[in-house]
Amino acid sequence: MDALVFVHEQLTGKKEFPKFKAGDNVTVNYKIVEGNKERIQSFKGDCIKRQGRGFTQTFTVRKVSDGVGVERLFPLFSPNIESIVLNKVGRVRRAKLFYLRERSGKSARIKEKKQIQAQGEGKKAKAAAKTTA
Image 1 (cartoon, rainbow, N blue to C red):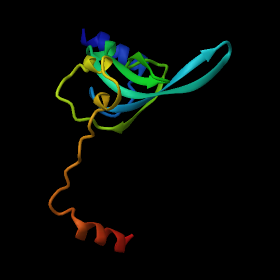
Image 2: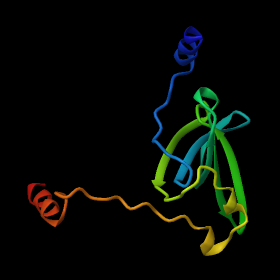
Image 3: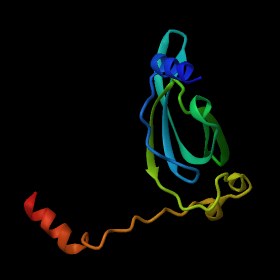
Image 4: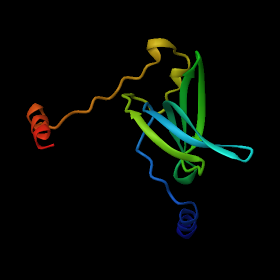
């Protein structure tokens, strides 16, 4: 089984994506082929679930466009995904955020996770960084 996984990794090649989870706001840039033309389209929204393991792993991104909720399911290791950009890290307590489908307005928002600074990274550390730059 390990030999099969090794050969599959060699043929497909793993792309490096940022670590994200349900509740994070991401932008997925993916290739669209129209006839003989190829372009990159971005889909920006909240990740509402991740599922699967290995090469069959998928994630669902939800956004509201003109008052209509749009969800799109992406295979994580698809060759059509150009890049994934992590915009915000959300603070949620669930792995699957299906309850957002019924909500609209302020109740559908996800709070942003605050980054806690280390004790030495206060105003003095920022001032020292300005003077050395």
